[in-house]
Image 1: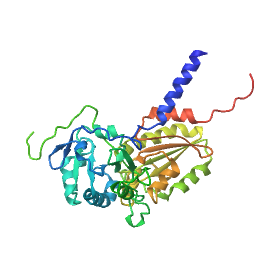
Image 2: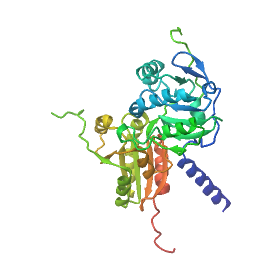
Image 3: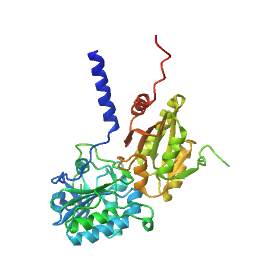
Image 4: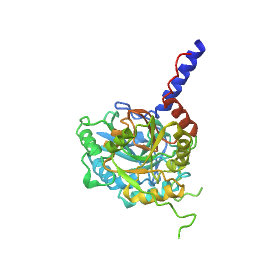
Length: 215
Length: 156
């Protein structure tokens, strides 16, 4: 009898584990991974803690290869360029392993930043541990923190990747407006379709080499 | 002239979230597996043949498979080519319309990450879901756990 109950409980635990995706940050959580190593496309070694803004911070997981990133690209760049001037720290982060997705290496990232006029830092998560700390799942995926460093918005750029003219809800822009004004965003979390992250294996750190440095 | 490497012409039927859910419910299958994928998504491409294999094992027990491509219009031709290349003739939908209502109609807690796998019972209620690539054993275990048990024939 006891053995049956034990087996039933074990099966239930296994089923629950099977059903639940990895845990992500939730509203109110502090920004994690502030000391993890990042490498900017301009060659600087930075941490996300150094990139916070006085009114808030936008951390946007993105990449080069993903069609959803391409669809949202111009809107994402415009938001980053605009709100960094309004006291929001802005950092775009690519956590993908270029050994698995060569298009997500730093050279294509530099070209992407140049082509789309990024005037904020675009960085490599050189261990992919920042993405793990956030519980990030796909690109693009936005995390917006308030001035105190607590998560106030997570998720979509807007409600239509493919057709900018058909967008009805500009979720991230609305959240950025609120945070820049010292208010809480009207919506805290909105899902969006995206490309599953292809992270480096745990424990691997791609060494940070400034541009032009020989290995 | 068709050759062994010519892709099979595959039609992708446009569908939004509410209509997809209605289609799932209209099937009245004991268990419906909705699998969402995209041609540009490496784990999706890796997993798709295994999903088909798991369904082939389970379809005799009443499991219905609904494939849904989340490709954007510019990548739909690649999706069609991929289906042809791996020999999938199964009816396949392609997601239409805004993302957020699509996600919320199908599985409110799904982050939108692809691939995603959603299981619905005969009444069309979501009974299990996951996002990301899973093993064949995960699929087999979920199907075994979720398929309704046959009614006992009577008291011993």
